[in-house]
Length: 71
Image 1 (tube, rainbow, N blue to C red):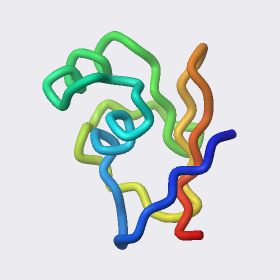
Image 2 (tube, one colour; image 1 turned 90 degrees about the vertical axis):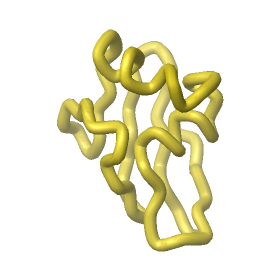
Image 3 (cartoon, rainbow, N blue to C red; image 1 turned 135 degrees about the horizontal axis):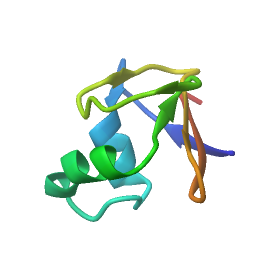
Image 4 (cartoon, rainbow, N blue to C red; image 1 turned 60 degrees about the vertical axis):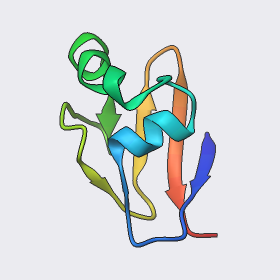
């Protein structure tokens, strides 16, 4: 599991996907979420603006898991 450190209260799912190089640009996120399974804390998520807080875990099959941290 890879940690994604944030210095703000939250990060959006779109920002996390871009930060971790899962997608190359923000314009790809809508397509990516429609075509691939993305789980946030074990639940399927399709909202690119979903707010992720410290402790949240994003799982993408065949890519990996990312945990949002403030440390």
